[in-house]
Length: 306
Length: 301
Image (cartoon, rainbow over all chains, first blue to last red):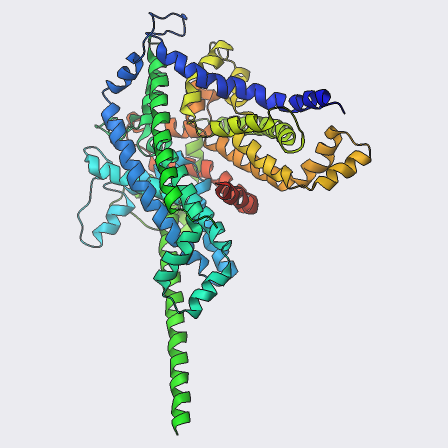
């Protein structure tokens, strides 16, 4: 077959995917930069008042919720990611130590369940679990003589609401990490462990010197994807607190950066709202880029590929 | 004498080691069970609340158990009356089928091109596609909303337009394209050359040999994609202009917002079960494929 024909044939196979990607992925990337450059853009009338370099970014920064959104997103990221990575790693190691396949398989299923649940549905269940008067958590704490805590109801403190949200997010994100770690653990050559046993190395030492280094590419991968996922937290907040994004009487106290994008989109008819949404999305993108870059740099030094 | 003592000592050591090993295993089980309970409790609380009467729900201290004979199955029909959940479920299934079918077809075709065909710029194009996976979806959402509007799918929205708006932007996926290309690449070249000798065209080879061989991967993609639709919240909320065009997640959230007054938790949890159970059943049946997909996605990193 002529090379020319081969090329044409290939583009025929690629066309459906590429057309969709061009419209819904590539064009939006380009258009985001156009949107943030327009002043008071009104998409319904297709009008704008000129161009601006930083105006739309300033609008995002001046949003009354911006500081709160930034603080919350960072808190969620830097608490829930390390905590869930460590817990997931330990659970996988212990799960892998169970000698009976059937029992291991059963627990694997249990730990995987949160992955296949709807974040809204289970968020509601968490909210009721943490209910001040009728919830399970305060009943349990009561067994130890602890007075009922107002986690997420009317008048709840910021700290309590945030702790509840963090517990829920950790719970929800464990499953994915456990499955990835477990498949990694099962791929480690048993020889390493036998050698360690001959040298009668302690369990902690084996974990630190064999398991973690051999699993490091996966730990790296999970950390990067979890950081990106945590920066994008939004549905979890809706599941637990509803569109109010906070306990009753304290709206937006649990807002996130992604919430800024959707808040702006909800005002889509107002001039400049679309540009503000685009600016917020670009800020989110910039943050993920910086952190992915930092993660990559760290991994160059720490990750053991072999 | 000396010898006998040694043997006894050895025997005692052996016993100690065995005891230690057993203790360690007991500890492993204890910790794993502890965390398993942590995972299970929200599900348990959801189920037990869904079976309570209103009085039982608002009791302090809470009731931890309800006898099966007293289970309030009526809560499920109450939940279904509160909002048109059947309609939402039907919408969700329809959207899931359409967007998954679209995704499967576009990724099979393009996956084949990337895995098997030589064309100019293939590697560059592939790298560009992979790079887009880094970009948060919110970047796309803003402009896609404008695009959908310019297609006329928002104003005076009909059901067909709502479904188009919810499916067309999601009829392909770079991640699944990457995933499928990997599966296609593992199919030995010999099969291709043999098919060529037999006079088969590329098209026949793709559908006759590659697709059947890669079926497990295609199954995985189907499930993961359907799951994404099931859990979609933001996009359907943004574009559906009428309440009855929404998907399950939106319906669930809106039906039980506390701005309407005291939440009927038993109904809320019953509705949550209706939304959650289909996914869990699908998972238990198709566990192998889902796990494979997820762990594979981890290895690629």
